[in-house]
Length: 334
Image (cartoon, rainbow, N blue to C red; front, top):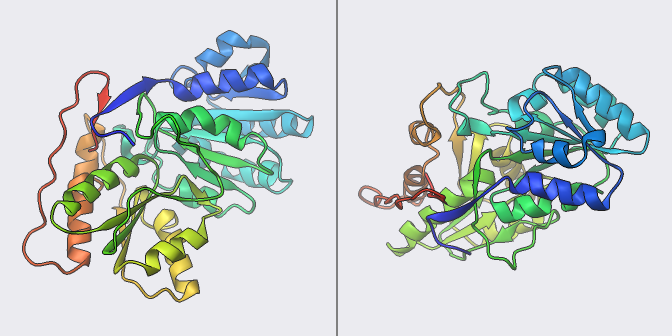
């Protein structure tokens, strides 16, 4: 893995979808009036005859995608995560999920990565999609995974919901990293805390683990790119080997990764204290920058450090987490 500040890449998903479409004539692209913002202006330019601009009519867009899937196509549907899940939920359930059609729903700007306030912040999208029968839910963390995810999900049976960060995407993993949909990946090993992180929270989780390691606290950081179906075996194994369990997600703590891990621990009888890092039963406000929101709502590196420190019952204040200076073209954990 690379060290922060991470180099960034522009539109890794958009380029990957175009490359997939070059090999697969059945891949189609739909956009809900956010073409450039969702990186699929690249697809529109390369394959205009396979691109559908559905406008700001998300429910209709899902219905069109379902019809195309019934005709043998694999539609990739794109808009911001909040519009991809809340608005067309009924169509997703009845037109796509119930008949188990291969529609790939791609939601950009997850959680509070959008400074645009509650109308644009997908803080419940994982919970909504996770409760849909047969839905696969993917929340990737870096540009390397974004380059691989189209190929990884194109042939998954039934529907898929994919969360993607918008804009400059950090390169966290090395070139040899391979995205796997059937397992979570243990990135660091420690016997004190098990820290399961998805999506944009992986970078703060890794940074927090390094801070804690400097004070003799061993943290097993587990990257969880697939929240459903969850790799339950890894959750049980890593949790049982540690004193406390933490989850970190750019989402409400209810219904998402934290809830999924809690269910596994409870059903398996793995008796470990659990702390969930994420939004706590609140809508977030609008702001000038996403880092401000991550700090205010407890999703920063410092928040992860403090959560682990307190969960372990350690004396005194938690150590301070320094933020690496990021230059243009770099990304530093919040």
